[in-house]
View 1 (cartoon, helix red, strand yellow):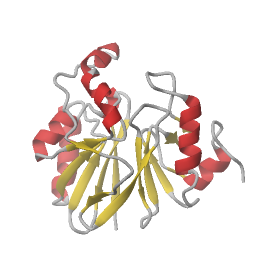
View 2 (cartoon, one colour):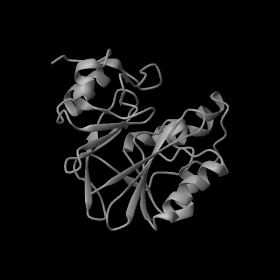
View 3 (spheres, one colour):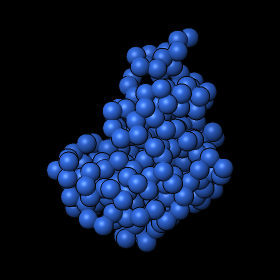
View 4 (cartoon, one colour):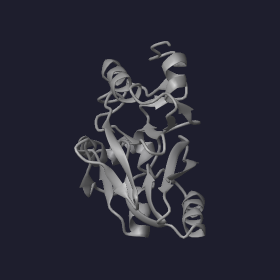
Length: 215
């Protein structure tokens, strides 16, 4: 069984997730830590449960979701995994960061590419990879059929969706991603978004003002 722990980090309150199972292996999704206090909070949680980080994963590569990549990869000597379409965002990160008054030097490059052809595995667990562009090229969601949850990044929020006015954003593409990849999941599936509180697929299908499809 996978345990999901959420940490809201940095100015943008990005949800950083630590997922672990009974083997104590864990993955870290969207490391958003931006100062030593946030880094220590994550470190203390991992050490308190005697977890073993095995992979750093991105839902997408916007600035707010990659601020803690260098620290995390170096601290735990783990690889960074993301969709190939995240590469341009990583390479341009120092320039993008300046726009938001954030400093990123030598951003961690992607070591392992992810796509829908294979599952994301750690310990005794696996997550189905869903390619869900529209908010940003390279956006991925991670679905656990067994534990009935999905990590949605900035694709789907509680009664909202990711913005589409940034580079590579496209509302029609995002809508299709949500309808075809997320709203086809069971209604009871818990959705953990990149910002804000969790929700369920069934609730969003009825109540989300941007993409609801009704009962």
